[in-house]
Amino acid sequence: MPTDLYEHHDYYLMDELLTDEHKMVRDSVRTWVKKSVTPIIEDYAQRAKFPAHLVKELGDIGAFGPQIPTQYGGGGLDEISYGIIMQEIERGDSGIRSTASVQGSLVMFPIFKFGSEEQKMKYLPKLASGEFLGCFGLTEPDHGSNPSGMLTNFKDAGDHYVLNGSKMWISNSPMADVAVVWAKDEEGIIHGLIVEKGMEGFSAPEIHNKWSLRASITGELVFDNVKVPKENLLPGVKGLKGPLSCLNSARYGIAWGAIGVALDCYDTALRYTKERTQFDRPIASFQLQQKKLAEMITEITKAQLLTWRLGVLKNEGRATPAQISMAKRNNVDMALTIGRDARQMLGGMGITGEYSIMRHMMNLESVVTYEGTHDIHLLITGMDVTGINAFV
Image (cartoon, rainbow, N blue to C red):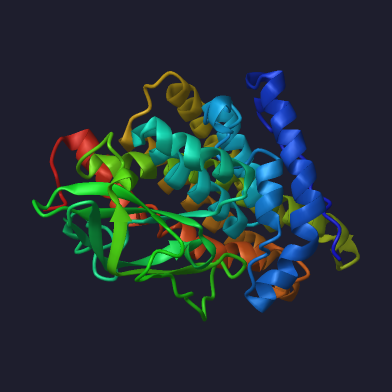
C-alpha cells in the first residue's frame, strides 16, 4: 500500500487565522485520511468500486453534518470547520468528499432546516453516525441547470402521496437508505419529500462505466407510483429556494474541497521534482519547473484567502449565493489547472496510479460540472454584478 507523505503548505501563514478548534479538526481528519483513504483509494478507483466501509468511519470522525447541532447528532461546529473537513477529505479523494458533502449538505441540512421535529429526531442522528446513508434527488435526465423544469411529481391520495418520475446522476443513491427528493405537487409547486429504501415502486439503479469519481457510487432514482407517507413531506419550505439553499451549502464545501485536491497535486509535484534528476541535477532546479511550482502555490494561496473570507461571512450569515458560486467556480478551475501542470511535471509517471494526480484530474471533471456547471456559476456572478439575468 502507498504511504501518504503529504505535508502541510501554508505560504501566507493562514493557520494564524484559524482557531485551535479548527486546527484540531483539521489534524484529526488529516490523520484519518492518511490512515484510511490514501492507502486504499487508488485500488478502489482502478476497480471502480466504492469503499463502503468508509461510511461508518466518516460518521465516527464527525464528517457527516459537522455544523448540525449536537442534539441531532451533528458536531455543532462552525462553517470554517465544515470547510476544513471537506478540504482534508477531498485531498484524499473527491468521491469520498462527495459522499460526505451529500450526506451533510444535501440530506441532513434540508431535514434540519425544513423538517419537522419528528423528522429531525428520526433521521438526523442515524445519518450523522453513518448508520443511514442518504442521497439528494434534484437533477433529472432532461433537467440539470434548469431544475425548475423538473417533471417528477406527486399527487395527494388521501392518507399518502403518490410519487412518479426519475432523477439522474445521484451520488450515493444505489446504497442510500434515505433520499431527499424534490418534486412538484399538483399545482406545480416544488416540495421536498423523504423517500426511504424499500418503499414499493422505488428503485435506484447504479450508473456504470464512469471515467470520473470511480471510487464514488452514482445512480438514478426511479419512482413508479411510490406511496410516500404525508409525514415525510418537508413542511418548512416551498419552491425552488429549498433545493437551491442546499446547493449553496454543498457548493461552499466544494470550494474548500478543491483546495485539498490542489494542495495534494502541488505537494506531489514539489516532492517529485526535488527527487527526480535529469542532466545530473534535480528537475526542481530548472526555471520552467520553478515557474510552475511558484504559480501553483500562488493560486492555492489566493484560493485559501478567498475561501477563508467566505467562511467568515458564512459564519456571520452574510455569505451570498453569488459569493459561494464565485468561490466554487474559481477554486475548481484553479485545481484543474494545477492538476494538469503537476501531471506534466511528473512526465509519464503522472498518468500512473502510483501517484494521485491523474485520479484527481479525472475526478475534477465531475466536480467542475456538478452543483452548478463552470459556465452557470459564471453567469450567476455576471447577473449579480450587472443586475441583468442572462439565463433567459
